Length: 388
Length: 141
Ligand SMILES: Nc1ncnc2c1ncn2[C@@H]1O[C@H](COP(=O)(O)OP(=O)(O)OP(=O)(O)O)[C@@H](O)[C@H]1O
Ligand SMILES: [Mg+2]
Image (cartoon, chains in turn cyan, green):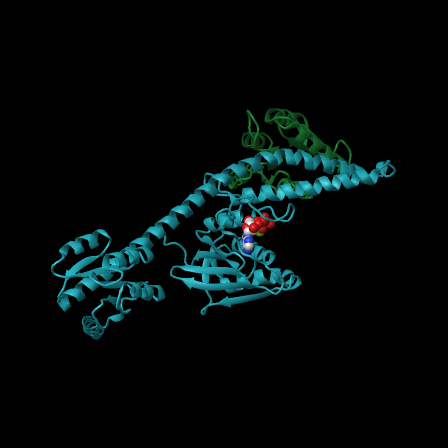
């Protein structure tokens, strides 16, 4: 948010010290924060030290002239607005100045109130451009989020289709191995040659099937079917976030201690409440905590922060770990995206979390600086939606 | 367990799966039978006493839900456990409303399947013991 009371900053550039000083004094008198420069070089130097919003610039100066100074100013500080002061005899300079990007030009001698009005207008233009830029950035961010959501949904549909088809052959493998295991347990096979080899191989098959089954289950659980429902129904109720956060932390305390990490919980007062499904939310928090623990080296810290933002309850998991490289940021929510070794991670955690947050009418976002840790933020409704 | 003990019937169009599950159940001492389709299942039920049917949902021609309805109509005391690779809550709810005892997702845990089997048998017995119960499913509405 812009502070409308923030003083307007102006750089006054003129080679005539008398003129400059008087004008500066009058502007200061009207609450403007003014710096002075006797020439073009000094003006650029002053802007390099600290950018001012509006530059009032004399065109006729020895050394770097006004127009050249203007060009360099606009290149180095595209945000600033420049008002040119031209001698009354040379409106041509003014026209050239406008072409080079000046906000406006005034002829000397300047009428003070008129100049002040122009300065204010220039500043308003800056504010307007800033607001437009913020809005454009916001739109772009939303557009990107929607693109990600669409891609995730498409990937999810594909992946769940595959999961469905895989389940049948998986069942044949599992039950064939299971049948042979049952036979091996019978007294009639007690003396079978190489019985142990069979038993071992069958146990391996069962373990592998178990892994595959976990994946297909997660996928099917995550994905909405077209009717907007999934195998597990959502049970919404009022949930105290500190209580569920404590529950999640208790489940990872041991692992955190083993890894030499500190765990912390910070909750705003009064304790935030959310309108959500505690079991599903717990699953998401655990996914985030496990990721955070796995990304952070001994001596680091993982913090769970709870608060309220407008209509939403907010829950953030913050770590001091290795962070996420920018090129991974928009891929980490995809199913099967993982940077962990085979068998260590399936890349399902964040995808499932994203899908669950969707079902809970909430959201999940990430911020990270490589080497400086990552923060995953969940937003949840605080109250049941108004019944229509 | 003797071959004469009441049977468990596995119904699945995928022969590899249906047969191996039948073998497992037999190995575990059940009198298990196998049928390849909903029609074969209904034929078999005419000739054989069956307590529980383990029924695949997705089958060509006559699917699991159709078969379930036909079973409940002609043999109200038979319990049905649906077994499917496609778990959606609609199928589960629909199946249970139509009188299925439960729904399991493939690949199902064998121990869990056996527990469900025993629970389904118990429910069957309770229904039979209850005087006046015709086995008919209350109108799902
Ligand atoms: N807190 C974090 N810090 C750094 N990288 C992270 C963090 N959380 C997630 N990631 C990155 O995102 C990837 C995807 O995470 P996700 O939880 O989806 O899968 P996974 O942890 O690799 O496997 P799974 O959760 O299925 O065991 C991770 O492999 C890791 O590269
Ligand atoms: Mg994970």
